[in-house]
Image (tube, one colour):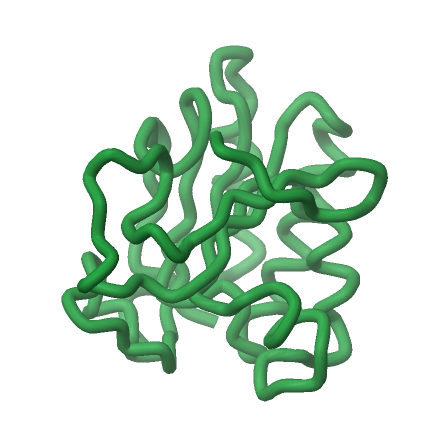
Length: 170
C-alpha cells in the first residue's frame, strides 16, 4: 500500500485534532474529487512498519482525539489488510482513548456488508475497529458547504453503537 500524506494536526476530517492518513488508490473517481492524485495506487510513499510507528508517535499527545483513514479509498481491497494492522496497533497502544474515523466512497450496506468488489477477507474485521464511518461517494451535484465532515448530501456519518453503525448528524 502507498499513501499520499500523513497530516499530524488535522481538524477537517473528523472531530477534534486528528492524525489523518491519506491512502493511495481509488476506483470511484468522483467528479471534482478534492484529492484526485490519490486515485493512483502507487501515488506517494510506500507504507511500512516505520509508518505505523510514526503514526503511533503522532497519536501520543493527549490533545489528539484519534486517527482518520481517508484517501484515496481506504476500503479498496488492496488497502484493507494494511489498515487493519494499523488500527489494531492503535487499539493495542491506546485502547479506546483514541477513536478511529474512516472516509469511504463505498455505501456500507451495499458495498461493504454485501458481496461486492470492495469486500475481502478482512473487511468485517476492519469495520469492527472503526468508530465512525463516513460513507458514500462524493456527488458534485449534491455538494454542500453546510455539512459537517461531509462534502455532499448523500454521504452519511455512521457512528458505532452497540457494535452497529447508526446514522448520526455530526
